[in-house]
Length: 157
Image 1 (cartoon, rainbow, N blue to C red):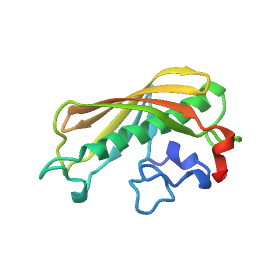
Image 2: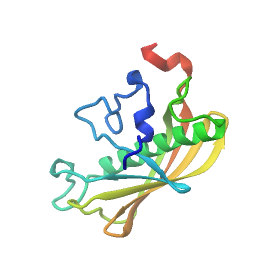
Image 3: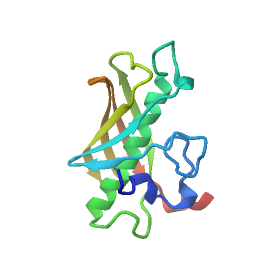
């Protein structure tokens, strides 16, 4: 995708997350985009993401749901506010609650498709439902309750 990802709009000081921070060279560098009414990201697990031979570690899958969810929440926050992504002041969301259901083992070695949909936007809170697809089957479902980062937490304060 040539368009910037939701995470590309995060200010530099808020772009260090292990899962989605563009400034974290050792991180996953997850990139989420709109695909109609859904958000989508793709990630190919590496050998070090193994749980048992041939399958992806569940903590990584939870991280993908988490970061895709907060990115989708930020994009939804801008939409609801009628603002373009990246406009000031920046909207950054953090996880208040994460629920993950593992439906079947997730095979290692193929790209994963992470999808999300906005369930609710209420004030500073956004609820995102998300799922991970591998080999044309949903392997993981989750829900992220994301809240807008309070200004007092910004910039290390």
